[in-house]
Image (cartoon, rainbow, N blue to C red):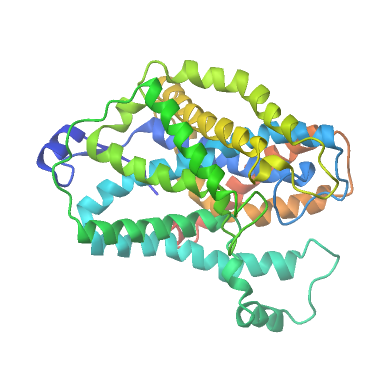
Length: 396
């Protein structure tokens, strides 16, 4: 999945396909960093028991430790998948302009549909019936178990972390249908984006997120899609398309106030986040905290912190990488070329490592860092080996 940018002025002036396509190194770096964070948050859940994952360590930490993990996981959740969708929306615009709606759909079905089908049909059953981390042995008849997986409809929610690929495919199909019905016209005036716009965007997302969580709070999902986070994802993809039409990604990443506001989000974020958690106390054992969703102040405060932090941290990460990591190197290029394969394949690698480490236990924060590091390294090694199989590199 090569990420590229364009000469926006010549393209927007004509309202058509970009005249020039050039690779932006910092965007490849952003994609790699976000992949690191995806593996990290899944490894962290193993020891935190905060969030949802296939397999967790049997020792559940106490509430103070969970709250410590919540700060890390909550800050990641506030921005990293939204930034993935934003970048995807940005490049989807130019891809559709080059290929047309029909060609764009065929390309998305190939690049996203094949990895999604492979995960649902092969990787997920491998996790469930071969690795089977919940007990020492899996089902006796693997063929019968695999068949039941499909006939029972279990496969519908068998996307695992590839819910992102599934959602991106759905967004892409909807975008192609929209463009087929309403071709691109005059892009209008270039976007003007200020700090007040960023704050307004975060507040608007918070209000809609709060409303969604009245019926889809934390901990709920439909076919493995956690709709409590989807307000940001939909908006991020749409904003990526809008920036592609009316501005330039490199210009957005050059905003001078982006890094300072991100630093404020990092320093003040834990205080504001824990303030929302404090409003949820006391938390009954086994019950979802008030900030998870519902008509209460804690849920509104958490959504407001989360969405504003997500906007600021996304802008800050893009600006930081553009300023500090905008040169291609052999290491960054190697990592970037394998990042999508890591996203697709990291789940069984992480689960296998967790099963090996399961007999050991100590400080959960130390073990979470160790598992994250091992899982990232091992996933890139597996991705490199898999991509050597003839034909695989075309989709991974």
